[in-house]
Length: 87
Image 1: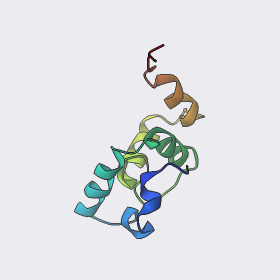
Image 2: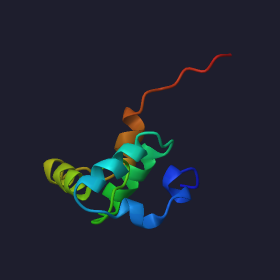
Image 3: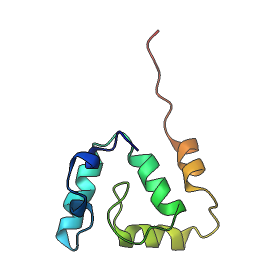
């Protein structure tokens, strides 16, 4: 995930508590790899930090609601909008 915007920031900014988590998640919304990042965190059951615009609590809730998902990366790839290219 070399293109992740957070790579240019101090890593601790993504491992915060409380209201700071919302700020960290908001920064993710501009990131070109938000989907891949979130999928990796879900697939690997990452417990700490903000990943893919999701807080720890949001990821736990998503995993609990969808326990049968085997590959979040595959699921998210298949639901990404197809971008038309001018040609």
